[in-house]
Image 1 (cartoon, rainbow, N blue to C red):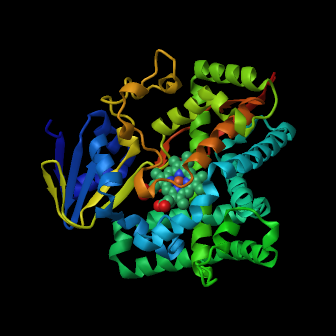
Image 2: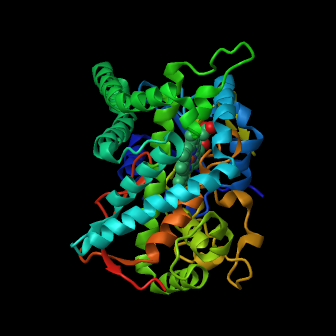
Image 3: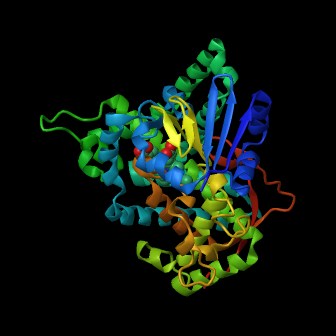
Length: 449
Ligand code: HEM
């Protein structure tokens, strides 16, 4: 079957794209465009919205691709951590970090995730206000979780400082990819300088954490201690201090903002879909009956899990994944020169009616085995890729799924969240898919039984 391809040229189209990128790529998905090519000046960009081709880029031919320019430009901030490194260095770092995410460890992390969420629930119970800025609270929660589970450090006290620095880091990341900043050297230098300053701010907190681990390594059993204890046969540490900091910063950044956004969007969708919310509450009452969830409950919470998946479908926090072709490449009949940029957009593909009946509807039942509305038998594996795929697949995928399911379960048992009246909700596609305004919800206690 020939690909449905669209070719657009010239800067006005680029402005149209940049003005509202999610509307633009969402439209390509809704119209089932397989390949969209944009050219203007030296820019040559291919958006790929076809599961076979997505699989080829991310998995089958992954050797032909490196990360896109956007991530490369963020090296002053992220250094050579897992998100940004390439080739042998990436393979080695990934091998070192991987054991930190094995399933036996996830069970340990699960307890901490539930405890952190339970603390948040207690705080909300004491809160006199009727409304809560849930998007900010989710950031605080996921930052605390990633700090405790992976670094044994409660960064809550530093949360505002670390959180603000991380937000600044993301802002700089976006600004850095503005073509003007890339073309005008003084602007670029200024941006890079800010990136380094911001990094220094976060480094101070990270160095403290690393020092604590160094002083009494036997006391810790977390991901950081795994990274720190790795050494070769000669006893030389695999990770220099510099790399260790790059890795910590990357994991802090990648490990909290995405999950926080996923949670905020899930609350938003639940508050707009009372029938789904009622099913969620019914599952929680039946399986947990008021007690806190545990790791063993994961398989017993299929509807809660389906709510998370369906939210990740409609509002994938990583709404674009970008790559650059190292050598010339073929997309079926389309020839792509070396150096061309690729974007794969879960946001687009997750709204393509070829793969999703009524793509705009929030329907957790799509994901429920044994439900007549289940669609997974007929769907291409690569029509859904909120965590990417292949060698660069999200290392925190299972961690994030568990975290989101546990957090929703523990909170929804105790509270019903409904969007505050007058609350505007607007997509704000930055490095991750945020909401433009803090998302404020009315939080009503409910009887968990
Ligand atoms: C809902 C939450 C999350 C989403 C949607 C998400 C999404 C993604 C995606 C799409 C990628 C691949 C990017 C690419 O191929 O260019 C990625 C990579 C990565 N993610 Fe996540 N992520 C989430 C949570 C987490 C968590 C909780 C952690 C850590 C605790 C984490 C750590 C990382 C790291 C280190 C990488 C780079 C992996 C590599 O290249 O080897 N992420 N994530």
